[in-house]
Length: 79
Image (cartoon, rainbow, N blue to C red; front, side, top):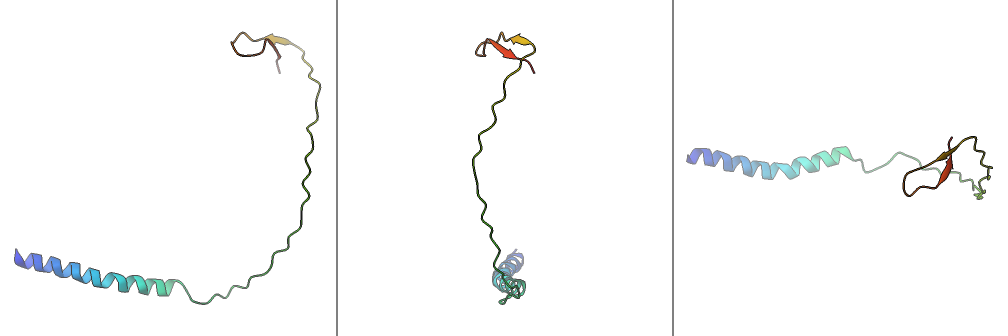
């Protein structure tokens, strides 16, 4: 019983010591300190935005349909 507890405690202590070392080593290898990329200014062209009213089309109904549901208009156009 004591030997298994000792082995478990040794594994926990080793993992606590090894974790920061492994993380710092992987971060050092993953991210370089220098960048070789060259940043260029982007050309920006201004765009003029104008609101245009929608054209009003005359409603042409060929057949009138009466809606019998509550809350809707009395007569509508069927399209």
